[in-house]
Amino acid sequence: MFRLFYNIKQAVLQLIRNKGMAVASIFAISAMMLILGLFFVISVNINLFTEIIKQDYDTVEVYLEEATTAAKTKSIIESIKHMNGVSSVEFRNKDQALKVLKRRWGESGYLLDSLGENPLPNSILVKVENLNAANRVNVAANKIDGVESTKYYKETVDKLTKVTNFLSISAIIIMLFLIIVSVVVVSNTIKLTVFARAKEISIMKYVGATNWFVRGPFFVEGIIIGLIASGMSAGLTYVLYDRIVDAIGMKVMTILSSPLVPATYLASNLIIIFASMGVGIGAVGSIISMRKFLDK
View 1: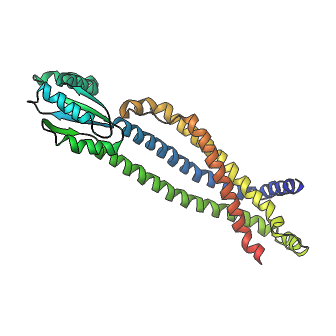
View 2 (view 1 turned 45 degrees about the horizontal axis):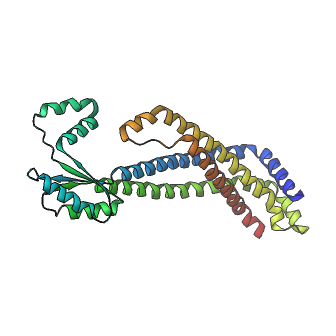
């Protein structure tokens, strides 16, 4: 316990002595973590939107030919019901389809009244268990006599999945780059303290102090810098995101039919992630800054 208090005391004294560089390091790391935080909230919301899209597009719409009779329609429905991966089947006549289309068009729905004759076909809505089942049902339904065509949003989901994967990979690459830069910043900050205490450290080594005894205060110093920076960046990210949610949250829900992830939910995750990163960056930076000196 005495050793811990000694390390903390020395780390605080070192930060005060070299406060200019310490403050610069804290702000630099905070800025880098803020960028990471924004990437994080964007990625989380895109993942949420993609999952919602996948849930909404778990339907294959089977369009029937105009000449398909009621008996034939019933036969087609029974055939589709027994396909592997089908969870439910619903018949939608052309009048119901027109009402749905008007509802989707919202205020512009009145334009459909000028069509005269309803051009939409009767259709069967097939709910499937997953996207793989949707692909199977789509292929099989197209081969049934009396079916004109089918429609489901595989291409849309595939594109969204590609975008999500691209953003995830990009975020990881940027995160690694910013972490490396942050480690270098912490390392250089602590090096200044090491150089200022070079004689003192040499005497400690001469009288038999272990490397970890010498390294302790600098190790704690790096962790303190990382924790302060992570707290600042987590707070800034939360405030910015909370303002964005308040400003455009309802608009996003209206346009995309998808909510934004609540700021309070992200806050707890950001604190854990940033604190872990801050401790890691500070610890690694301090170890790197001391390695060459202690190896002499």
